[in-house]
Length: 115
Length: 112
Image 1 (tube, rainbow over the protein chains, first blue to last red):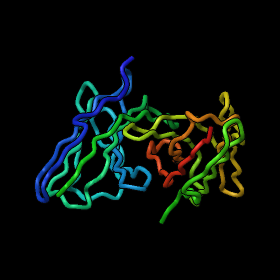
Image 2: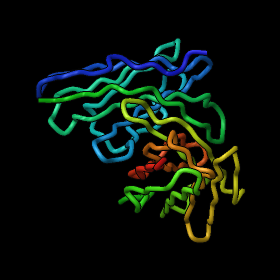
Image 3: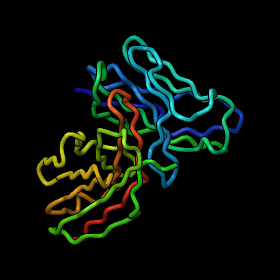
Image 4: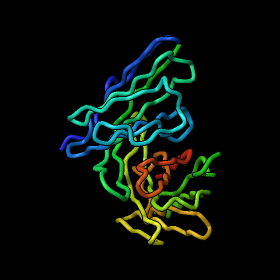
């Protein structure tokens, strides 16, 4: 069983640029969540996708957007990068569906540095 | 507004002794709680969870206790091992939202 994978591992971008981060869910999982973890902080929820639809969003501006594909892989896009966007971006997948909560399984993250 | 708080940034424990990590929350709607462990350069790894209908859940060396009236949970690791040295995050969610709210983490160091 393959776990959650993310690419790239590290990325350096310039302020104002756009970036796309990618995530492959764990096999059998149809829900993907994205989190931003700044240095010294816990992960902060950006948004979640369930069966290709956005299922919830945290306090992040619209320049943070996402997609989920039919194979349940996902992308996080960030436009007009700001210095404060420098962080570890984590993707997590879960079986999802229906009521109740499920453990989320995290990938290793993408370290984004904005200069 | 920090809804999930881990007030101890770090904790050092001797190998073989008990490690107790604490977490407080403010949102009474939270009904599912989890602990994750994170090593450097890796994503958080799920450790153990507890539903609000329980007050204790055990898995091997790890036990989570939930005190709903105090809005407090704790993770006990017995016996502690050097490989347990990591940052531990507690997280909470409301049923059906799938959104986790994380604390800021506690760095545990187990001394050999």
